[in-house]
Image (cartoon, rainbow, N blue to C red; front, side, top):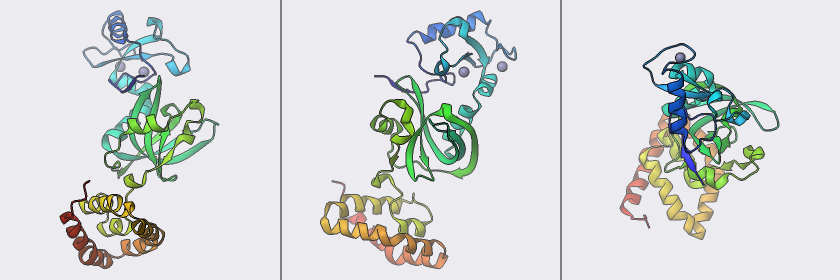
Length: 267
Ligand SMILES: [Zn+2]
Ligand SMILES: [Zn+2]
């Protein structure tokens, strides 16, 4: 079973045969090392499939053409923008057509584009669904890159996620989405609100504490569940007040973090 990331800019259109490099060189040579669209030479060249593999195109020379990077990007605008958003860790607003043809707008933090089983997938966080989901890039009709920077969950592997959650037939891909595992979630509403971000080092420590100590004990579990039931409204209150934020931070969270740092709960 083969699983690999986009190896090159030009790996866009589906699966690639083992002799792809050979084929690629043949195409570049045939086209005289020039972009067949704008005629430029001496650039980074891409070999493009005139008819995409996903639409029944082949890797035969007749279906392949040399393009410069610029011209190639214009052939795949949505993927070009997705890749840029991934690289810059920026939230996107996408227009997405699901497998039933239903078109909707979504806010997505795009984590990674992955080729798997001859298909391309996008793994990303769906803001409305509050979960990490698997998308098909070919169903992304429009991409709007926002200014909002996202932080992927700690130690998250998009490849592992895809392997774990993808089942076939591919048709119902969207249903294989999964809630973000508890430990990958932002963790603590009150702490997050107080520090203003779910990624402060202190929050990592609190999260570890919750996962490794509290969740292993019955009483701990009860506390965690009560906490999750009651803390969001409190967190909202805190996030709206700078005074409350620093009060909670200094008088409650910081001392707690200090104590936790002293306890070794790594194992
Ligand atoms: Zn292409
Ligand atoms: Zn060109």
